[in-house]
Length: 201
Image 1 (spheres, rainbow, N blue to C red):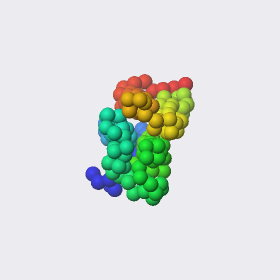
Image 2 (image 1 turned 60 degrees about the vertical axis):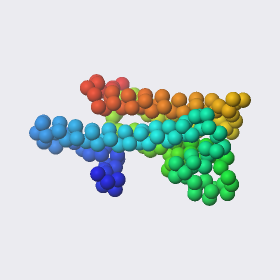
Image 3 (image 1 turned 30 degrees about the vertical axis):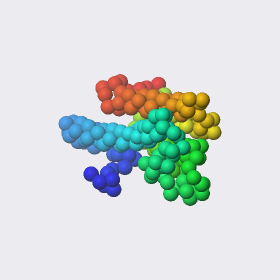
Image 4 (image 1 turned 120 degrees about the vertical axis):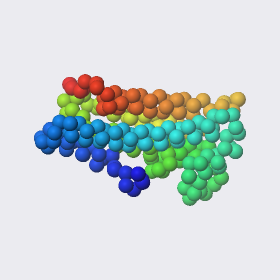
């Protein structure tokens, strides 16, 4: 299915909310529709999570693989399709701190980690949930932690290499992002795509 034709997450969530037993569908038909819509929802979340993971992997491979960091910044911007954005914004040769700002923390750049986390938050907030369940839900808390980890990152400090050339602060942030993305996947799968009990207060 093309990107243009693929249903939006919000429209899928609204369809799920509208599919209640009051539609007078046969039980078998209702179950089929719910399974089909749940698969579409899961696909949307997997796409958003996969994009965030891909961005984190590109950063890790480019900046923590032992290559001279300065030499990797140009190719990193090319891979992230952000070379022109960087040039328009900074009018300078690539430097580590502004590259990190653009590819990690800038939520207005569609190629950044922060932007992908905003998309994840929107998807998670649209998930149908019991009004009596605790709020915020676990998946919302995970996305909030992920967003705060990125927003609170000291990019200037992250861009200062150790004596051996390593960038441990970048490694630590990427580890946090990877862990949160795994926890988010497990949580959403458990509560929405398994036979877990409904969360209630």
